[in-house]
Length: 232
Image 1 (cartoon, rainbow, N blue to C red):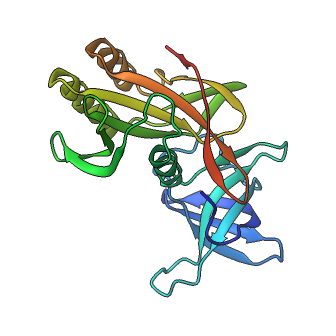
Image 2 (image 1 turned 45 degrees about the vertical axis):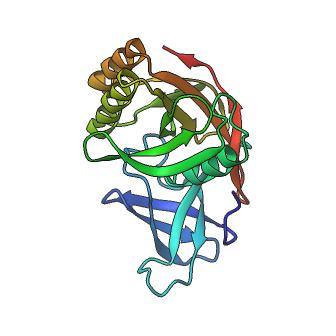
């Protein structure tokens, strides 16, 4: 998925109120960018970090920049916009490029469970497959990506709903999409959210499958990368 507007480099001044970030452009101008990430962004919101912003000229948008990437300045990137992975994954699913999730019909945002919408419902090849996607950005150990970076009651609810789909005779998959280029394995941050860690164990026992992939990330585009092992 190519970014529709070329990204511009900046330095982070501060992130606040979860969805706002003050940034300094290369020409010295200070701007406020929208931060599409409800998590804690642990390790990704330190002042003076190099970041990449997407400008826009949409008159309906109050903020004229969106924060898309952290540039670790060592050849690696992290994507911070939690909406981007689903768009990249949708393209890969429709092209049949996601191992283990090939299906002729791909439907996003389908109602299921108790007042929820599953990220993707795959059908037309065996039992219906319900796929929930979580964007993973936390890494506290070299090469090891973890989810979540904050307590997530919503994520725990999704695990229960996926388990219910398995009980109803469907296939259910929790897909952890790592928006980092510096990790080669994935696990659960049980110290951050013990309830979610217990929920993952219960869901796996109920038959929910775990799949993990990373992303290829640059200031030009983000696309689905390779499968990663789940440690848990």
